[in-house]
Image (cartoon, rainbow, N blue to C red):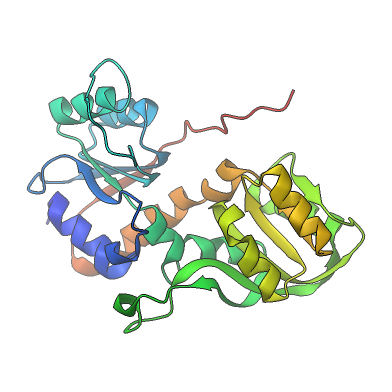
Length: 273
């Protein structure tokens, strides 16, 4: 049985990343499309931009599922000649629903931050910045970031090499003594500057995240801690595989017939020269 857009949104809510975990400022769920459209093919990407929409059109997909929303701040004018209007008109004319799982996926149990920690072999993890909202207190603990221990003590330089190898992040930016021994590590996918106080309070030796600013780096340095800034893209491109894998398993359990394809055309917009 082929599901509808509404049924897949419900499946994501119940089996992957509950929508109520999303941060208040975020824009998750159905961004464009009709809840009753049937879905046979889902293309999964990181960014809800024109390349993924064009690839979805060529593959005759019925839905794209991305980590980053098509837009977050309210749109007052929908100009079809520029984003996000150009994506909206393509989605409407081709009947491709646009669904995004962003901070709800970051925070969920077995979500993006758990996957990031596993890839970096960080063990015995706990939530770096736990949710305190009563809505989330009835289920498993949720929140942004993860903190735990490394499988065996390594230097900052060795940890940076592991990060590059496991995430394909080259180069990375490092703050702190490259020879310092690492036993505890914290991670936050995407932009992790807001969680620096939680990292400093956690007792972890190194913080692995992206989009760190100069003065934030100085703050970490002043506390004798280390930072490995992998960039926003490298810390979150793994969301594609995670979403596809979990959606495939959830659809199988639900008895839905679904084809899922990863969009292969995304690269980091930042290039080192």
